[in-house]
Image 1 (cartoon, rainbow, N blue to C red):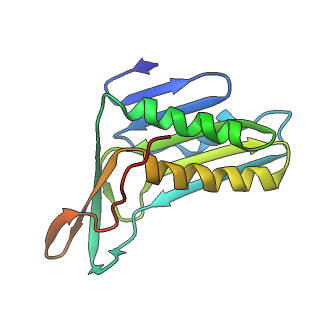
Image 2: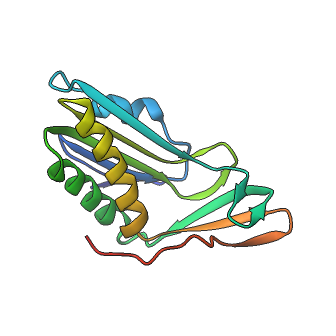
Length: 158
């Protein structure tokens, strides 16, 4: 694991996970998973939208986490994604922390595999598992105030 003032990450030859307070770089995530053995690369971006369940006029989101565990928990998602699906070549996951404006990407996932079906399934698994098992909290700001997201779920261990 390496650390700098704005990025914390883990990277090996098949897995890359990171968190940052800066904008996420789509090209770096896609470039990481590209490989001559991969016939498919799937990319997902989760973006801030201007509404939430029961709340119109959302203007921003802010994400917080436990710094001590975030890279380890994201790594678990990447490792399980790579091992649970047939012929996955590489997995990359990036997540923003801090404030994010409407339209900005807050999470990116890219998966490469020999064939497209496995890449699509693995990408969906990665975002669903991240949302279920990684301790990241979302605060919503809207016209009349702010509060923690109403769509929180119980954290499950991988």
